[in-house]
Structures are given as structure tokens and as C-alpha cells.
Image (cartoon, rainbow, N blue to C red; front, side, top):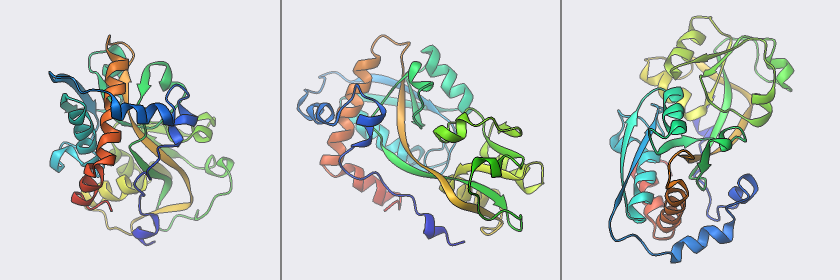
Length: 266
């Protein structure tokens, strides 16, 4: 399978999807952010996430291009940032409890929205089901088909609304993508659900040949990445609005595109 068949697409201008997913933030509201004044004195925002290369990871330059986008957005709004990488479940819990302010890089779900405020979408990610080369399944028509196999995914992640709601009989969570791919390679599971770019990147980092894992057709979802702000901190709305303002600004002034080009994402 050719990797460029599933090239991840940067989010197109307009930011329309957020209005449907988060009714409180409309497109008109987003563009009002451009006219809001920056704070004179910078405030600090504590952030956390997991290692999820090529999008964000402590081993990547600037923590990865998504981290660079988030940093630039906050900087444009007058905020300083610091990020710590940990497991995904730990990152979610720290921000949920208010020990950290922001989770960098998350898909939307109604359940999560009870505990976190969502930003505007900052990038679009293709998610699919991976198999080890030679496995019998090349194409699926329903989740019932997938349910015939042992599945794995990163623990605590959202995949897609229909997938997350399905009562899979054999779905195991793994703390790291590398552990899930190792389980796939060793036959512990039959299929692994992950972002296309992440699965290929982590497989390469593990020394697996590019053609050793393949994505089954069709892809599961084209998901938007957001940041999530804890609802358990006093200035949560202020941080969300500041980020959204800064994000719109870096799209307008070309910084967003510059970052994508710098990280070879365009």
C-alpha cells in the first residue's frame, strides 16, 4: 500500500466543523477573537500529552508540529506554555483534575466534553484499522466484521462515535502505540486501531518494515484534533478563548502554514 494514498490533510481555512461539534463556539464567534486585545503580561499555561509521533512527542523538534502550532497560538494571545509528556490516560486525568491546564491533541467526544472545554479544531487526522501483512482481512463492511477479531487500541483514546459505542467482545487497550503494534506483530491481537501517520511512524521507529503492517479499507474516520482545557481550573474559558483567538491569528498571518511546511506536512 502506498503511504501517499492516505496523506493526512491539514485543516482547511474556515473552521466550520466546530460549530456543529461545539455549539457554544460558532464561526462568527471565532473570528471575533481577532479583534480582542492581547494581555499585556504573559500568563503561563501548563500542558501535557503523550508521545504520539509524528504529531507530538518529546523526541521531536519543538515537541512535534502540533505542539508547535499550539505554542504559537498561545504566544500570539500573550501566553507562555510548558509541556510535559506522559501516558495518555495520565494526561487526561491530570487535566481533568486541574493539575494541568491543557491536553494537547484530542478528538471530540460528548463524554469528554463534560470534563473539558474544546478549542477550535487545529488539524485533521486519518484513523484506520491495521493488520499484519498477510492477514486475511483486506476490506470490511461493518463493525460486526471487525468484531470477529481481537482488536487493540491506545488506552483511553476516542476513535469514532460509532466505533466507541460498539460493544466489541475483544478490544484491548495499550499504554503505548509501540506496545499495541508489538502485540499485533506477535499475534496477540489481530487488528490495531490507530492514526495512519502514527502507526507508520511508530512502526518505523521500532524497526518494522514499512510494508509489514497495512491499513484495511475503508478508513474508520477523519478526525479533528483539538486541545482540551480543564473545566476544573478557574480561568478555563479565558484560556480556551485566548487559544482560539491566537489560533485564528496564526492562520491569518501565515504562521500556521509556515509551521506545516517546516515539518514537511504540506
